[in-house]
Structure formats: C-alpha cells, structure tokens
Length: 306
Image (cartoon, rainbow, N blue to C red):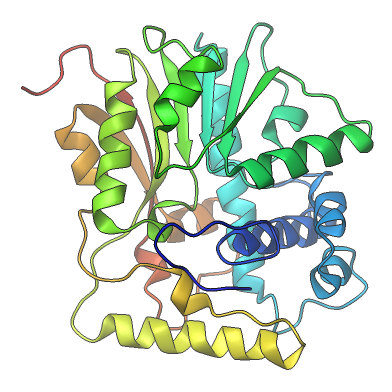
C-alpha cells in the first residue's frame, strides 16, 4: 500500500484507497457480530472482490480479528455506520430527495438503505473505485434501492462540474456526507471542500461529517506512534501499510465551527456519548484522542452569513 504524494491516485488495495477496504472489513466483522446496530451485507463480498487475502479472511471470519482489528475499531464501525444511516434516512424521509456521498469508497448505502421513492443518490470517488464497486455489485446481482448515479472524479479536480453533469441540481436541497474523509485532506483542501459544499447547497440542505479538535502540544507524536504500532502489526501479517503517511497532520480549522460560520446550524454528539447510547463499552482510545471526536449534522439556513 503506497504512501501519499501530491497528485497521487489509488485503487482499493493501495494508498488511501486501502483504508476504504479496511473500513469495509471492520463493517463486515461488526455486521457478523451484531446486526442490531449495523447490517451491511455487501461489506464482506466487496472486500473479497478487492483481493487482499488477509482482509478477505478477516472479513469472512476465517481469521479472528484479535489485535489486527481491535474491538475499538469494530465498535467505531458500528456507531459511525448507524450515525450516517440515520442521518440519510432522517433527511430523505423529511423530503430531501437528493443525496451526495463524497469519497464513497465501498459504502453500499445506495444498495441497502430503504430510500423513499424518488431519491437520487450520487456517489463520488476516484474512477477506479467507482468502476470497481459498480461492476462488483452488479456481478453479485445487487440492485440500487434508489436512483444511484456514480460520479468518477477526484476531489482535487473540478468535481462539481462532474457532479452537475450527472444531473445534480444545486437549486434543490441536498443531504451531504463526508464520512471519515477530512483527515485525509490537507487543511486548505478541507476548507475548500466545505466551502464548495456550501456553495452547492440550497437552503434546507443537510450535512454530516466528523469534527476533531486540533492537537495539544506533543499529541500528534503519540498519535503517530500509535498509528506506527498498528501498521507494524499489519506488516507482521504480510500486509504492508503505513497508516501515518496517509494522514495529514498539523493545525487546521475544526469542521464544526467552520461549518457554523458558513451558515450551517449543527447538532453534535461525542463519540463517547454514541458508544454509551448504543450500549457499547466505554471507549479506550489509546492516546489518539479519538474520544474527542464529534459527529455533527445540521441544516443550512435560508440566510447565510455575509
């Protein structure tokens, strides 16, 4: 799995694309353990189709998760999936008929959620990722439960033009998600993305993402040490990855206050709160400050700040 470079590209077995396959692996394990919080029947077959042997065996339960996929990450997969599932269903059941899933990876919501009639779901990701998922799910006999429109584009390029070419209408309210995405963008690219989402959103649009605090002094070093330790465990099982190199560190605007300044009225729930509400054990984040993550969702007001 290669590391990040300016202008890089990837498939689902390399660089940041592999994190989507790892996330799907965690969803497959979580689904098998407890369908009351997460039920993603496509996670395992999609991981199998990617073809990374270790991840396939983990997703299928042929190799115990153990230390490779800590219970923490399985539990995060449960509450994160449920949070975004409920966000989209709340928005569309309230009458929003246009959905935009950014960096959709191996997300299968367009195929597994009970979308209201008339919902259009746009999925945007790298061309290789979009082609792979579309083809694989078709081969599995899966059919979208909404009008799914795949948009093959890079968030570093003119993705709004590609989105509008697929039929997206910025005059209609949209439900947007940026799930597990912002930390893989440089700080200025994160701000640009949130600005563009706002520009493309009609009043009444909804948005969901995660908001993490800026690091305290010395905190990034402990996070990098933890990520390096995780990567080393994967390498011991013949999966070459460098989790630290895939992330962008340093000061950045926190997503929640930034979106508020743009005119979004947000609600937030801390990850510890979501663990407790869903009956999961207390979160132990091993020094990564994961426990300070907020899951935020909200609505764009009719009157935006000047």
